[in-house]
Length: 85
Image (cartoon, rainbow, N blue to C red; front, side, top):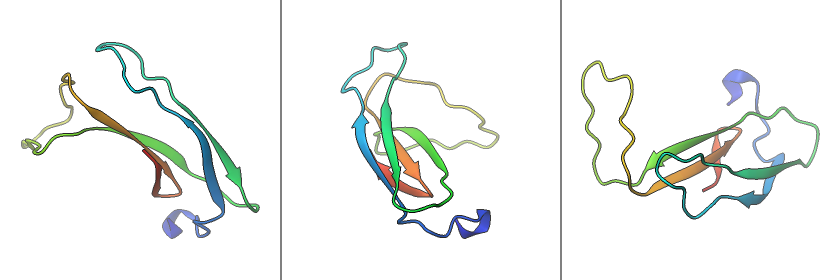
């Protein structure tokens, strides 16, 4: 994260994470969390949704994946680290 000016990785805590256990296929995933800065710092926060599968088929020229039913995991990243799942 130092490449984008984020050097203080321990200056932020995440709490009050609310992630539903299940989302209907075709439904919307709604989640929330609270970030608390322990001192003045810059923050980059994002998330990733990834399938929980044993293997992934990677093909040349692949740009998107087809969404399939099954188990997925939401990872919340704060300053480059997975802070909650």
